Amino acid sequence: MIAIVIVLGFWALRLMEQAYEQQEFSRMLAGVLVVVAAGGVLTTYFLMSDYFSFVRQGSLLQQTAETPPVQVSWAEDGDYWRVTSPFP
Picture 1 (spheres, helix red, strand yellow):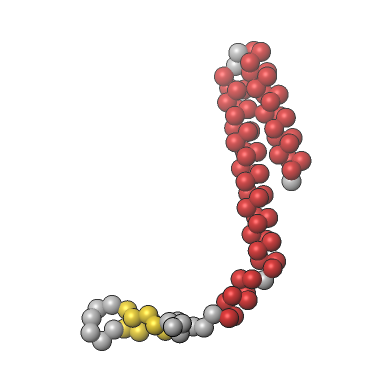
Picture 2 (tube, one colour):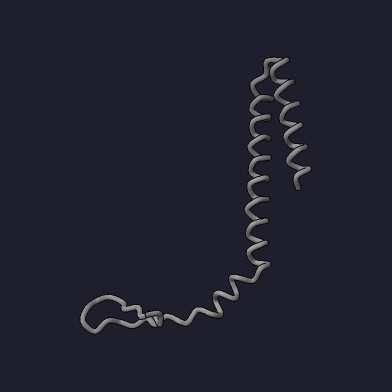
């Protein structure tokens, strides 16, 4: 995955060099868009790796299993929901 970001970075630099040499705005814009795409790929990679490590630990399932249910009922003295928690 990191190799894809590196290749995209080199491609963007190549596009920007050609744009500077030939004074082309469209290639410079293409280079900027490739850099933005590489940043998006890198951001997604880091976010998903953090998420998968969290899920792999099983802490989400363990937390759900240990948390007692919350009771929700309609309040008798008003127009609102009453939430009662088993925690003191």
